[in-house]
Image (cartoon, rainbow, N blue to C red; front, side, top):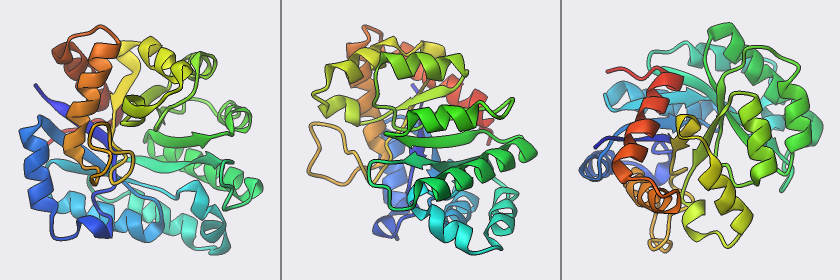
Length: 257
């Protein structure tokens, strides 16, 4: 059985010098491939560097919506992001999107940065990893102004209504440890309804450690816990879920050794 962690941040400082140990634990749990997702220009470079060193890791480069203002303030940022995106083992653009829950960067800056990322993804024929929180209407409006955008809604935790709109746009849906501890039944109903051919697994490590390990640092190995929970929730075998989500990850991100 093989699993893929399509969204983690193993390049973060808190994992430094523990990468081999973490990858060994992940492999033991069946997690054979990982995508390290950038959140700033420097962080994206670190993700690319790690991917070059470890054959089981690929990278995505992007600017988290919280960092949109800083990204736009430097006129050279777009050029630097494109340069990073053209590095070997980069398989996606992001994470990018809209986060109105905290709104650390203004809505206007977030929307401008999102457009820049989508346009880069189109130019380089790369899928986009989207972060959307309390901002669905603006996200759909921007997304719909482009054609042929491929990607995934990372850390999906909304309802059936938004799930249907996501699927109408042919996007994939990334589920993580949130599903194991949420008390929101609408989120669980939506998780059950994600078509198997549109489902991806992720950890968002070091965040969102699944139950019953909530007091520990999230790692890629925890994909197995989330997969087991979802298989039970969706009344599917773990093997079927693992096989489908691994195939989906390979299809969207074109993962190859």
